[in-house]
Length: 44
Image (cartoon, rainbow, N blue to C red; front, side):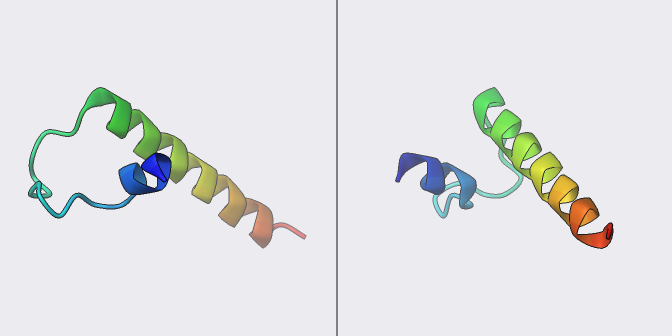
């Protein structure tokens, strides 16, 4: 539950606020994971 909440945007915080390093790392890992999945889906 807490992991899913981290991936969702915080309603309390504006999007321009500084995110914690842990949250930035999670977002980067999720982005790279999604990019890898997209590339794998495009390859036969």
